[in-house]
Length: 220
Picture 1 (tube, rainbow, N blue to C red):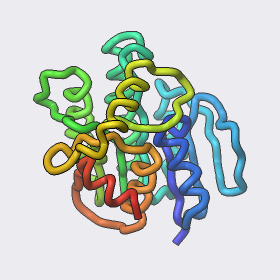
Picture 2 (picture 1 turned 90 degrees about the horizontal axis):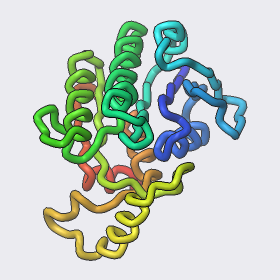
Picture 3 (picture 1 turned 90 degrees about the vertical axis):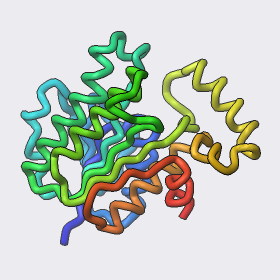
Picture 4 (picture 1 turned 45 degrees about the vertical axis):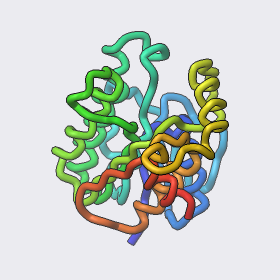
C-alpha cells in the first residue's frame, strides 16, 4: 500500500517539524497545502499552493491519502478578529475534514488545545471544542485529537506573551507533578512525533490525547 500523508499548516510550529519527520519516516509521499512554498525541498515532498477560501477546488489533493495531519491554527491578534480566527481554526479544518472523508481518508489527526470544550467560557478553547465536535461528527475510521499545553519552539513571528510564558513554565517544569503535570509546556517536536507515532499505529475510533499523554507518546 502506498502511504501518503497530507499536512495542513505545514509552515507552523508543529506542522513544519511534523513535515520533516514524515519525510524522514515510513511515508511514500508527503503532501502539503500551503499559501506560500516551504523553503526546503525533498524528493518525496509535494507542495501545493492553495487559496484556503477555495479549498473545494483542491479536493483531488485528498485522493489516495492515508492520513491527514491538521496543524492549522492562529491567534486572534494575528488573525485580526474573532471571525477571522474562527475561519482558520474552525472553518478550514472542518472543510478539510469533509473533503478527506469524501475521499476515503482513513486517519485524521488534529492539533487542538488543552481545555478544549464547546461549552468553555473562553472564546479560544470554545472554538477548539467546536472544531473537535465537528471532526468527531465527520465519522472517520480513526480520529485523533491532540490537546497540548503551551507549545515550545522557534516561531517565525515573535509572540511576547508566549515567550514570557515559556520561560516561566520551563523554570517551573520541575514542580509540575501530579495533577499539575497536565499543564507542563511541551516542545512542538514532541507533539509532531506523537502525531506521527499514532498515525503509524493505525488505530480506529475517536481518541483524545491530553498534554501529559502527548509527553509520553512523543518521547518515544
